[in-house]
Image 1 (tube, rainbow, N blue to C red):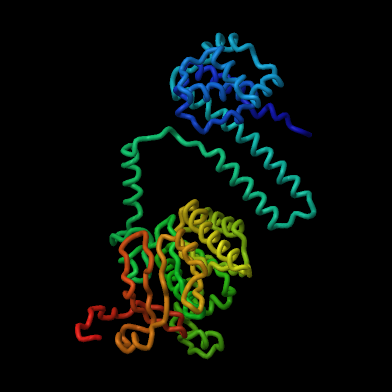
Image 2: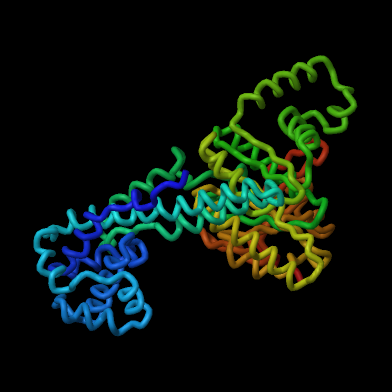
Length: 449
């Protein structure tokens, strides 16, 4: 049975809004989110549009003549008036004194009711569209998921209502509380990295995206795993979104990191009784942690968003790792655009909209470049280059300074690193452990040519 859509409307609220604006047209500045199309009664929407246009043009006297002239000045509006047989304007103005509200608070209550009713009507249309798609045999899971997310997101974006513009000073207390709440007990801002030297440059802050660049098979995923385990140990709900490793492969490496037992021996079972006990204890520990690993080689933005939103609600997700940003499009220009679009999506829709700290990866080519890296780095808050040290660096730095180097080559959150600077790391691939090493002496040699 079809429902009567007129039940999702409030004639009194609509009339009250128009009547109030006749006497207090300046109130319209405080509710710029109200649109003529939000009125159920077309005549109310037309009159609201006329008052809005009059006030924009500096006319503060809202009477029958001014409203009528404005209505007749627009062909589309005039056609609507003729279709719906608009109320006698002079009579309407005379009656407005009885429905008018003289305080801004009362007026805004009426406006919010009009907007709410309009949202409900539009939401009902979306629901009917989704319902129709459900009965369409051509609609698979991905199409339905995309339809729901697209329609709902578009609708909610349209109906975001903003309060009146405030002086910045009125928000100082609220913003200062937010700044203070992001600090840790030891004075670190945001979610700290496992590596102290990295914290000198930035931390993982909610709403920010950090990018790690590396050549293939150089320990990019191991770096991510070490950061993930560090967050889990510190009670930070964490997601590892993996396009490379299946759950079993990831689990083997995770166990190696946590226990110090080589990946090979975990796989072939050649470990001691004591090590077996350690593995069992570690398994029990992992079961209790707020951690999710998802393996999906190919995924859509809608799927990524849905997973993050569910985990934000389900376990209070705070830190997300995306390993890694890639595209299978063969055309170079289209590939660059796809990579940039995915990076933009992760920064704005995941990190920004859901207020999650995010770390993502990108793969370098043989020239040690990311395809059209400018498109990626325009969206990130910080960018890091992860690499193994050169033969010359290994000889100069000594073994104590490790075998890998990391450079923060772009940073919008803090201190900048020089082109020749890097942080020293020890990477043990057998145990999937990356530790900060003794830092090399970066002072220049005056006798060096």
